[in-house]
View (cartoon, each protein chain N blue to C red):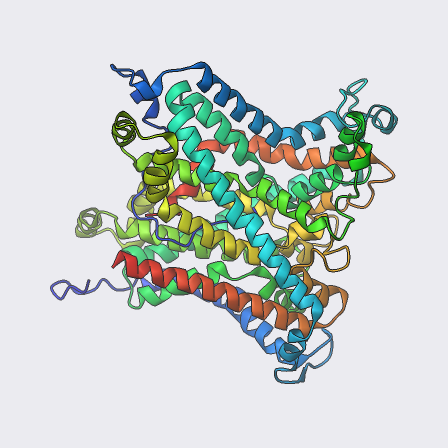
Length: 308
Length: 297
């Protein structure tokens, strides 16, 4: 999400996952007056359902029109079912934007970003949250500060320096840059999780002769895996959806990511209306699949960092 | 916090070194360079010429700059205010009504549906809406089908309409974030509190204003601050949907800076714009943090 609405508030302890207790309240012994279903309540339910469907209508429209020929679109408009479900438009757009390459680039970059960001954040937070290094509060404020920096305030010097260093239009430099950017958020999130880490465990391990390195990998890492896995999911999505940095730093076809590769379809609309729709569909599908797989982490993770 | 009994464990600094160094190198150095550029006239090649604060004085008399800030005010309404209000209402409706009467299955189904736009790449969202709102796009085609041809518009090409369309798209994209956060915040509420209130004859609206909203105050605060910061950074939506146009009717500072960097080769001026945004963002974030630190005592 380019509008990463990551929070800067300290997370404190994690609350219960989103499963609610409200259902239990309804199923319990005394079906309280509030939980009785009435015609009115069905009407509200239907109204909300209609609202959600209307909200999702853009996706439905895209789905309908990605399988139409231009002629079919011009005669029957955008709301009709395709006269026949025609995969050729999607296949053509796939080829035109080199979608296989873009998918590969996006996956490669996002995995690299996740690895760099999580490792750096783990080290930083280990020093701050568990090692309690001197000046840890200023360090934490520093990471919080760089976490909110707008990319447009950094992008030109980065562009310039990358050109000087030969990192321009290369996946390596870009991946490192984005990884470092996210590590600031990860540091801040993990530090507060580590601050509540049971000290006895670490002291006991140290007593048994475990060094700092061993403690990190054998004790801290396994125990913080729930938070780490949520971070991985988030960093992957954020990195996938980045726009300004890849727009400036990854210009060649061989390096472009999925959103960038597809956005060049903009402006080719008039010649080929359903191709535009197909391009949007290609951009939507990977993240919808990802969303369906990691839905729980996504909704839970967002709340983890937000409020005490 | 300091314990005098145990000596402070030492040697952890080595773990902090790589992350700190890389952040300094990749984030702080460019930040300082941007600020330096903002005090120069520079086309991106050759040596920058020092001109002091001239770029900033130029900003103040630049109609495009003021237009971009006016538009940012609208963007913040679309990205922060409206989704928060709508999210509060929907969260309460789902939690306190649908969930109780028809079960959690519906709640999570609706929540997922409304959250979905949040995971789609912004550029793709822009592509999709650009297509839907185009002169021959889906919206106009629907209007024609139902016989309202006269309402058909060039939605993104009309200076009076484009900003409103951008706002609508922003609300659509953003709604899921406060909704999920609020629904999760509502888990803190003891269900019996609601039940007791209803037994005492409190209406849904009274429960909403007296219980739900006060309890969600921390979430509302977080959502408003984080989305306001996100609003100041809005770029991709504008880049893909309107390119800041028509005229400067949807221009935002981030896009304005981008134009000066990469289209007009006026790096000094672009840097002054982006330094201004950076400063604003840091002020907002700093205010939020100190306020929160004070509340936490």
